[in-house]
Amino acid sequence: MSEPLSESRPAILALTRRGLATARWIAEGLPAAEVLGRAGRADDADRTFTDTVATLRALFAAGRPVVGVCAAGILVRALGPVLGDKRTEPPVLAVGEDGASVVPLLGGHRGANALARQIADSLESLPAVTTASDLAFGIALDEPPADWTLANPARAKDVAAGLLAGDRVRIDPELDWLQALPQADDAPWHLRASIETPGDDPQTLVYHPRVLTVGVGCERGCDPDELTELVRATLTEAGLADTAVAAVVSVDLKMDEPAVHATATALAVPARFFDAATLEAETPRLATPSEAVYREVGCHGVAEGAALAAAGADGRLLVAKRKSRRATCAIARAPSPLDAARIGRPRGSMTLVGLGPGDPLMGTAEAAHAVDRASDLVGYSLYLDLLGDRAGGKTRHDFQLGEEEARAAHALDLAAQGRDVALICSGDPGVYAMASPLFELLERENRADWNRVAVRVVPGISALQAAAARIGAPIGHDFCTVSLSDLLTPWDQIQRRLKAAAEGDFVVALYNPVSRRRTWQLGEAQAILSAHRPGDTPVVIARQLGRPEEQVRVTTLAELDPAKIDMLTVLLIGASTSRAIPRGEGGQWVYTPRGYAAKHIKSESGDAA
Image 1 (cartoon, one colour):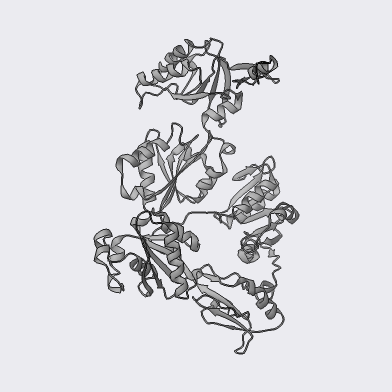
Image 2 (spheres, rainbow, N blue to C red; image 1 turned 90 degrees about the vertical axis):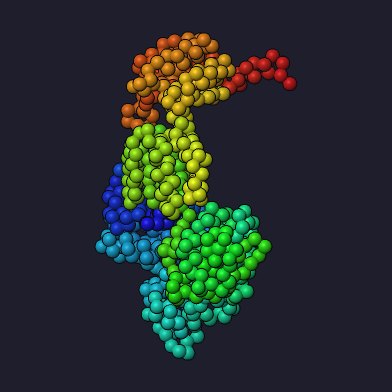
């Protein structure tokens, strides 16, 4: 299973058409990258933006590597006011429009230098790396491989200065990426590999290999602080560094346990899970096998078993099971650094994503981020097509219109396997879309594996909101929505709701007004509403919102012709107070007063306090 994309997805910004060509060339060598273009100048990008400074700051705040195909000064002026801790800032690079220069501006030791070299290779140019230790030795002391961490990065500057002054270093053999540095047995500086908490020696740089696995177990509903404190205390008493931990691990029954995830977050490592059978296979290596645990979860040890399973066949138990009131933990060590992505299984996630009416510009940044993170996309084929290049590199699971429950079940099945799934909807998932069928399915089936999935709903701009925005403010006062489809709701119930809305003088948004089979319901709805409001009540007819075929027009309740309405249309029927007024450029605005005028008149007459 491929790991999902996350905040680390590089963003390549182009401000001109010439820059866009270079950005596309760079993206060829960075398959996960997204190309963003300035609207009106580089419109053929994956996405467009209008505010360069705001876009740069948003990407920087999200921790995404930024490659600006523009003058370095633009990036400096945009990001200068928001710079903070250099140890946490993402890489930021400036690339000339002709591709001849690649300059890492920020985050040199957090990947910018390496990214500059990669981009320069693809452009056949030279990276302008200015970091002293990189230039002198081709090595960054504070940028270890991904499965190592530098415990005391503040001292790296002193060691680098010593090397540049001609000093030599002593290097532990495990630190193979540093072996090209000048060495001597009596050198003043020591580059040390250790899983222990670093001491106070100012002459020593300590590198921690990610070889420790922390197995945990807890009662349902355990206080997250209790488990986190138990783990931290266990590491401290054993003299072990938390930055040597590769993952927090447990049995899959605990996938949805907040305490487990809170502990992993506190240690800044992933949470991974194993089934009971895998943990039971570790029984011969357990220090404290438990029959009670076996009866409860199907294995003789959760904390010890998970720690050992994650450490691998050649791993060994360093700290046997420790207990608090409601939690347990144990620590194992692997013989070499671990890739957490290959340990056990992550908790799967399923995000219902609303794309809005159809135009990418009407989607939200949260929705775009959810799609970027996903490994799998599930949805009606047309909706998946609307994602365009954003769907690249992900597994598509296409369904036909009308297969809502099958879509939801398939998405849950994928997520239960540990995948990050985005279930794609148009508009808003919670408005006559996939959110309701999904939760209905979860309640009815009550499957343990589905219930452990992390489910999240990302709102989108609904057809109601888009239609209202196009024509003014028709829902500026109380409104409701009614679907005229009687496939899932009996018509007599729809009639009662329409009558109540009409009597209450609500603005009414009508969804699913007609279909090939249903041709008479809209006329019935028109008659019910006409009994309670005048014939000149404005009616907004919005069709194909956010798409090239978009049409938004205004008629009246009396003149509405149901025969000219189709399933791709949403109708906004005004209240008795709604008004249509002429637009300066032709056409009409529609709005529903909130009562400010009446309040003003009342105040003028002296009736208001």
